[in-house]
Amino acid sequence: MTRSAADLDPDDLGFEHTPETDQSFENALAKARDGVRLTVDDAVELLTTGSDAPGIDRERKEAVLEAADRRRAEVVGDEVTFVANVNNNVTTACNTGCLFCNFKDTAHQFEADYDDQHAGFTKTPAESRAVVEAAVERGVYEVCSVSGLHPGFALNDEHHEILAGYDDAAKAVNYKPPAAYATDPGTYVEQIEAMSVDGVHLHSMTPEEAYHARRGTDWSYEAVYRELADAGLDSAPGTAAEVLVDEVRDVICPGKIDSQGWVDAMEGAMAAGLDTTATIMYGHVDNEMHRALHLREVRDLQDRTGGITEFVPLSFVHERTPLYEHGVVSGGASDAEDELMIAVSRLFLDNIENVQTSWVKYGDAKALKTLSCGANDFMGTILSEEITKRAGGSFGEFRSFDDYVDLITSVGRVPVERSTDYRQRRRIDPDDGPPFGPTLGPQADGTPLLSERERAERAGEAATADD
Ligand SMILES: C[S@@+](CC[C@H](N)C(=O)[O-])C[C@H]1O[C@@H](n2cnc3c(N)ncnc32)[C@H](O)[C@@H]1O
Ligand SMILES: Nc1c(NC[C@H](O)[C@H](O)[C@H](O)CO)[nH]c(=O)[nH]c1=O
Ligand SMILES: N[C@@H](Cc1ccc(O)cc1)C(=O)O
Ligand code: SF4
Image (cartoon, rainbow, N blue to C red; front, side):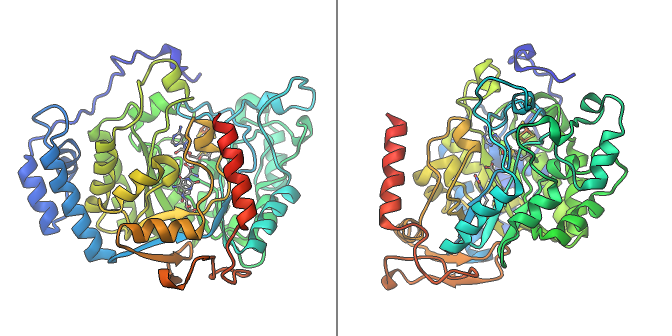
């Protein structure tokens, strides 16, 4: 049975790992500056600006940020990349119950005989395809699709048969036949086929979703990802990582696969030939030792695979989440913690080229600051955002190419449109416009993604929603 937030004692979460080391801050900083591979203890010293004293020391923090900024310049230069993408969340139905998440809606509300209104949604494969087609027509060339673990979801027809064969399948394998629901999401393979529109890059199926796509079977992650790749999947998002230390997962996402399960799924995706990304979702109950252990897990995985194209620190958005509402946490990470998380990711992950900063989580001002703390990628246009918005985030759902060019040039860096895998890149000369639009997609001819009128309408809607 999963624990609820109400049962947790915020003053004693029973953690064994604490941010204490025998290393000194000065030694750790010297190693970081010299480009020596960092240990977990080094990372803790840098993240805490010295574990021997409480709080963050301003001067020491600046020294860490500077070292990370220098490393970023050496590794990737002055280019700041971004991608023309659309988010398509297929369903919010999910019974996993992660305590940091307000994206999900419990699945019984989606059942055909449920009478009350609810705020969730499920898209059929045809509806997902329509979203992608409309975006591709505008010039988008990446679809990022992450979803709730709908009990009616299965990999394919064979998977449906296996799951339906279980006694008490709802309890045993989190399964109910799609006919029980008002809207049938189709199979994972059908959703992937549907979203795989003319040459678009499909970035989907987190490790947790891949687990759901093989639950109740003895199929390997590699086999599942191969079948999805055959259906049109191009790369897998390394979300669901949260913090890869099981004592933290036991508190914030006890219903999820454990750290080893996440690593196994990622290895399966890469064995199937897919690129992946990796993330950390920090700033809740985790401490700096947890963050450092997470970074080591990711670096080890990359040493073994080489298939991780970017690392994305995702700062916990707390406002409307069970963790916050039940007083387990009193807020998210501070600005200093955010800056240090980006910087130490850059310094520690010597085998991952790109560190992404998320304007969804940080807002533009802080995201711009992080571009001088080690980050070099500025995410994508996304066109829609549900996860952060539902958790209480308020930084919007769209950034245009014009916004990107303005923001990036305002901090003296070079705006570069990239493909998902970073192999295709186009440097943008700010003197050539505005307006700017994507050029790397199958239907991208440089026209802005949204017309002036559509942008004004969206801005108006956002202003009304804030009132
Ligand atoms: C909402 S899930 C969707 C995909 C799938 N259900 C899963 O868990 O892998 C995607 C990711 O969003 C992030 N997320 C969810 N709630 C968040 C919050 N309140 N603040 C920051 N990130 C959040 C988590 O890192 C999570 O893994
Ligand atoms: N950081 C966030 C992302 N990042 C995903 C990227 O936009 C892109 O899909 C990836 O870099 C692969 O090219 N997406 C979100 O929806 N929210 C974020 O906070
Ligand atoms: N969709 C995830 C973020 C994400 C998705 C894909 C990535 O590759 C990276 C990050 C979120 O909103 O939290
Ligand atoms: S993070 Fe994913 S698995 Fe967890 S509750 Fe949210 S949607 Fe479900």
